[in-house]
Amino acid sequence: MEDAVVLGAVSSDRLALAQAHDSRFRELERIKTEVWSEQAELAITIQDNTEYLELGFQSFGRWLASAAPKSRSAMYAYMALVRELEEVPTKDLRQMDVGSAKVVAKVPKRLRSPEIIEAAKLEPRETVKFVQERHPDLHIETQVPRQYAFTRTQATAIDGAIELCRVIKGVDTEPEALEAICADYLISHQDVWKKIQAGEIVV
Image 1 (cartoon, rainbow, N blue to C red):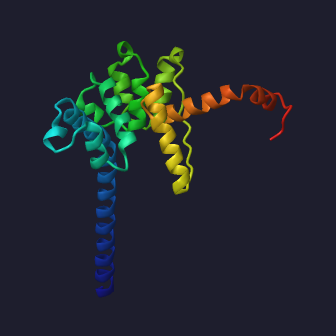
Image 2 (image 1 turned 30 degrees about the vertical axis):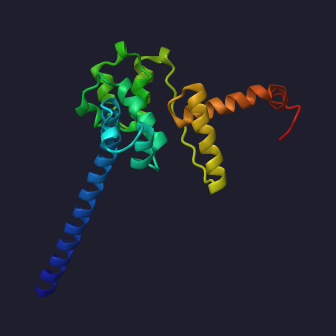
Image 3 (image 1 turned 180 degrees about the vertical axis):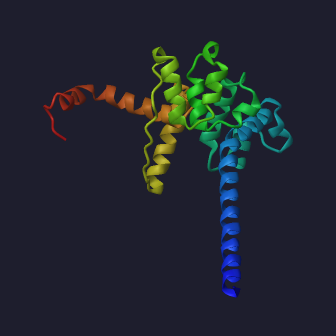
């Protein structure tokens, strides 16, 4: 009987620990979903009210580089996204993954029904599927994730090209900038590219 009591206590302790880990994990997942929009909203407020001057910075860009040195480019994209979705209630936006919010942003405002807003609280793939079924004429595409590991030198060159493209082309996000850069490269070498597509050049 004594062994059973001890085993029961151990089992109970393990269950409590597992539940604590599960609870914290779910909390972090919720925070991760909420934080991008809240950060963007705060950044917009600081920019629109020129609060960066009160904080001792000559420009919003300098403040953002100081406040978000690792995510400055992403923050500009998040700010643009929040501005685009200004009619979406904050409580709903807080429940959207940034990928799902980007899908909603591609839907014309007149078509952003309550059902689409609710669907945006699902994972991006499900949000895309829902919008595609409701509005196939919009040709909403499923995002294809790509991951690369760059050296510091490579990252410096790539980040510089993205920032330059953002200024020249006026694009908002890194994927859009990379697409524009690659499109320009294809156009400037279109003769070779056509031969590769035709099988005349094997790579």
